[in-house]
Length: 144
Image (cartoon, rainbow, N blue to C red; front, top):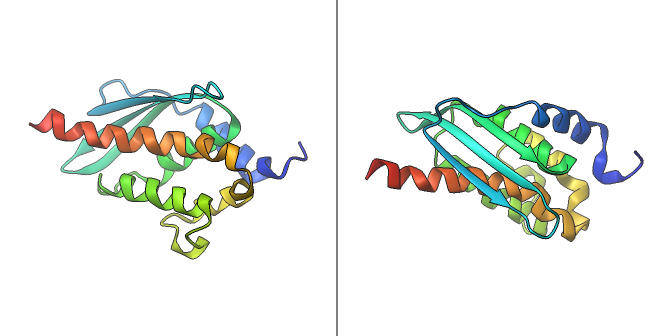
């Protein structure tokens, strides 16, 4: 593939994203669909003492969506649950061009640099981050 959106790093992450799998007993889960392109993702989070201990996902989407899910699964283990919302916002700002690469919380997110010029593909990258943040938001409901 010669499309700059699908560089080797994205394709390798996408391969990892396809093989994540759902968690058997997640603390919280959230599903987000993109009706425009048909991408769909469910993110499962196992959480102990406000820290993410495991991530599961079912990704039915393009390589960009799969790669984003893989980054979440790799980077979020051990982090505070609130970080997922901050990461979602950072990725959205980075894709929009309002935040520099140096401000990204996880270095692997810089692999999405070619997507910045493809506005129609921003949602493909953001979908897993939205699902993860939505899962965290349901945590408040579970704990109340």
